[in-house]
Image (tube, rainbow, N blue to C red; front, side, top):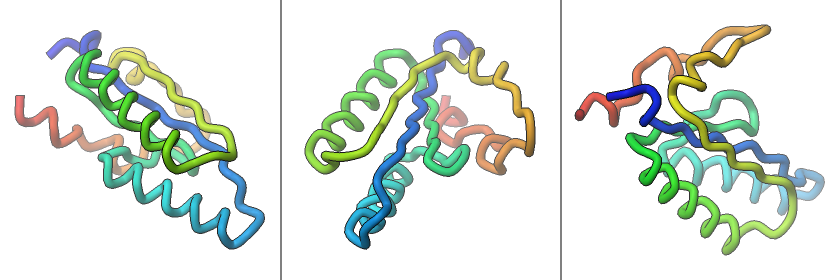
Length: 110
């Protein structure tokens, strides 16, 4: 599988956490991303790998629909890029997470 066809979606969010209700919503969104198969790269930064651009676009639509229905405040950004671009990402301080070091399970099926 070409690293130029395999796509990543990265979701970066900054949701309000001042009230108890806001903190609950923040944790709920975090759990929903994990249910969708996203792995936490850093706090409030999640990534998921997709086999193709079409499947990444579908994944992006699912997340946008979910956000439109459930979240009204805050700042959420979605970035789509190739596996090749992801692999060239530099880590300045720290190291890859355990999830990043392991190959994504879904790609083992191909």
